[in-house]
Amino acid sequence: MKISLMRMIAVCLLTTALSVTQSNAADRRFTYTYETTTSPVGTWEYEQWMTWKHYDNKDRFDFRHELEYGITDRLQLGIYLADWRYENVDGGESETDYKSSGVDLIYQLTDPNKSAFGSALYGEVLVGDEKVQLEGKLLLQKNIGPLVLVYNAVLEAVWEGESLGSLDESKAEWKNTFGASYQINPNFFIGVEAVHEIEFAEWSDAGDHIFYAGPNISFRKGNFFTTIAGLFQVTDVDGEAESQLRVIAGINF
Image (cartoon, rainbow, N blue to C red):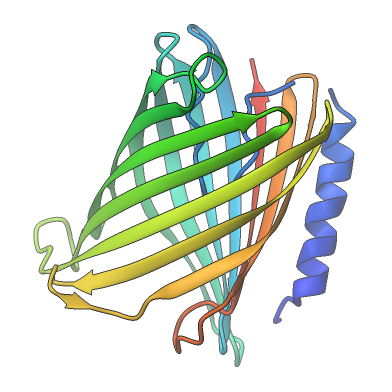
């Protein structure tokens, strides 16, 4: 059955409302853009991701289960236990697939709370049954009182095939992600996010420029947080998601 946008938003908002009553989490104000702050040394955090993408003829749900650990006050390790996907195509077809597992590292260069701006480097490796993916990011952040501005420059490389032994397709993707978030009170934040992406098949043939933008909200209480962003395609590129909704819920321990 095709799931409507309004139903999905309602479910996510209800989940948020229930979760926030449980019990300050890491400063995760965004879902598509990383901040330059890292987890305190010796602390763990579990994050549950869900991204819903709506296409002309199908709905796709991507799930991620992640553990984060503060190795030092500047270095954070992320462990992707599993990335998997569920697709529901018009006409009744559906499938569920495991995609990959992996790790990431974030190294903070400057602290946005102590310097003129924050900066960090991000590296990620994902390996699945049919793909290997590498990703690097430059993270920038500016804090202006209750307002936080963030920018990520992202370069992604992907090799795919029928198995890990025959990865015969490759592509690169360049992304720019932006975010602005304003703190209404200690528990509630509102803002906007935007994503620009362009794909290079076999590292040479540039595809269409795709741009998404939309609002986000973030709640936190005690050691729990939930952040939701809904993006809509500003461009008109066939075959790409018309809209997408991402929810990240996390708990520190």
